[in-house]
Image 1 (cartoon, rainbow, N blue to C red):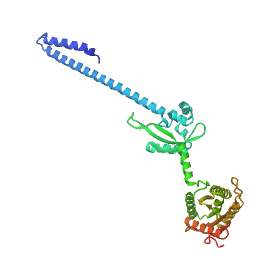
Image 2 (image 1 turned 180 degrees about the vertical axis):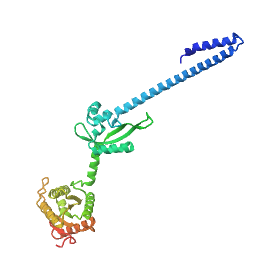
Image 3 (image 1 turned 45 degrees about the horizontal axis):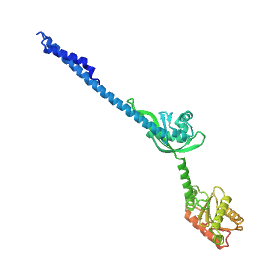
Image 4 (image 1 turned 45 degrees about the vertical axis):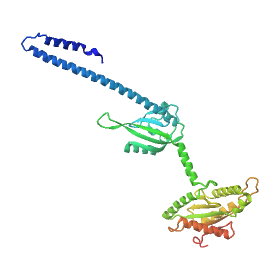
Length: 371
């Protein structure tokens, strides 16, 4: 504040005081009126000085606040532009107002302007209307979206898997609070999804043959048995064992033995229906689940498998053709008392009967057949 802002007022006050001390007033009461007027004037000047000081402080505070806001804006802009996650801002109706470079790049656009031109509404980036509906429901119910996974549309027609986190911005401009806009953050999790699917596949798959493994077969079979009990459907189980497989390993080596197992697995897969479930049960043993299949149809399928393996030449490297056969035990679902353990025990009993009776043949469990 400049020092001479109130110089004129201060001079007037000094002059007025000198008049009071100089005895220039007559004894008519005018001196008292003059003194009161001077006091009021001095009071007004003091108040004006205080107001000026307050204004200076407010101006300094406002300047400091503006500087802080500028710094925050620069910080926000730096985060917005340099973040590796996609960031978007919409109005209350979901119209996209701003996206950062990372989001434009994620969706396959060269610039943010191009992205906004082609995706006017946030709903345009969702692959399915169901996913967008879920997004809106979460926002409207909780005003926040947390860790939502959805597929987003790219400029080239492809899709990316994304994790979306978003929140509503409330306006306090009026007495009634309302949503002024939405800020969201999008992370590309496509690679993570692929890795998770691959991990699930590996956890369910036999690493040698590519068939389902024992654990996943048990899971699928339990579901199918529950369906049979509920709807009275038919179901059959085949237990398949490669005959004299130890001799193959001893004669040709375990690497060739492994290739023979892969060949048998391929033959089983190619001979059966797509709906049939084939798994490696362990060692040289395989198990097959035949949904909606009774005992007679299961016998026909088992006979085809025996014949297909018998006629297959497994030729590897420089070795001569290797021929193997299989013994198959067959059993079928009977009633609500039938469990998976019981079916596997019966199939195992029938399979060992096939081996005992000469191998390269099909046998039925006695509890399931009157043959």
